[in-house]
Length: 423
View 1 (cartoon, rainbow, N blue to C red):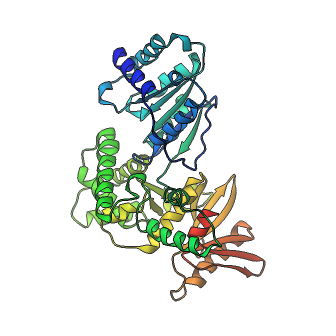
View 2 (cartoon, one colour):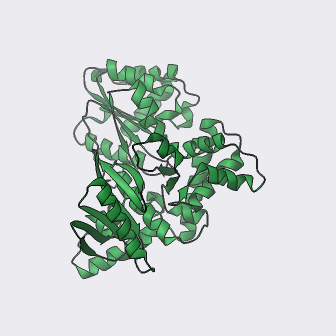
View 3 (cartoon, rainbow, N blue to C red):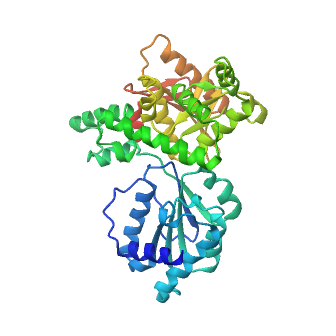
């Protein structure tokens, strides 16, 4: 295995990397922590590493920077015992770097069982900076929190934000230039009813749906079926379509269980809970729970499900659903900021209660306020939430309406989603 590692190392050191688009996420190059970049497949984790590598190459020798893709078939089967061949092979090739800081980039590292033990050992014994990527959310919790406790910083990466999407299209942000503003609004509609995956931005709708369908297949088979040894393939596919069809709605496991049982299919509630966790682990979807200090109340109430990408709705052919897509985009933008997200339920429901360092902010999403009673319902729920949390302001995010609404001592910022995201 050492010879294989030497070939991979040499090839990469000699390889020229093309210029890649800079993402909004800022990752430190010289942190003394292990940097982990986590996200679904194909959202751009590898290209983010290449961007970091290009920056380093402008400052130091290329042979002090090594990238290894642990999905390279030349490394199969790879065990933790063989990982030491990488370190030995590298320093046999470049013994002059033994006393210098070197940079190791490990892509899709979760493919090696107990990888975290190896990473921790070389972190403790070698003079190196370590960057890892993975397509499992457990890297954010179980593995990193236990084996690498205190040694790592994690960053989540998603498909393109709207600001990144505009950057790729070479559209500057200017709210007051009428032509640019019109372009932004036009592009927002394409963003809302399309996909934010990097590879599909310039694809036709047919090509986009075909590519996204392949993405979902890889996510299901490689990150769920193979990783967790799933036997009931029908159930995982059924649940995926159910969650996509019902995204942004309140869902309970009991409802899902009864729906499946009504079709004469054998299933257990435990299996539904387990498969939901697997879909979450692969970053396909994100459950949002009720805000409450009472854990039993949180567990007793339904969750709302949001999707990694609006394009999944088209793949599953579940309809246009402007309101759900709109709310999903708002959720993803909030999630990119890394805050804790829940929904609030009193007499009325607030879509998002976002905790930033323990301080709440309230958001409602309404694609249109034109429906009968829609505006008053959205305002009523935000007022109730502000009174409950002792807040003076909240946000009502819409497709096109914009105003500042003052009621008693409360302020509600009504603004278009595209503008809120760009601010």
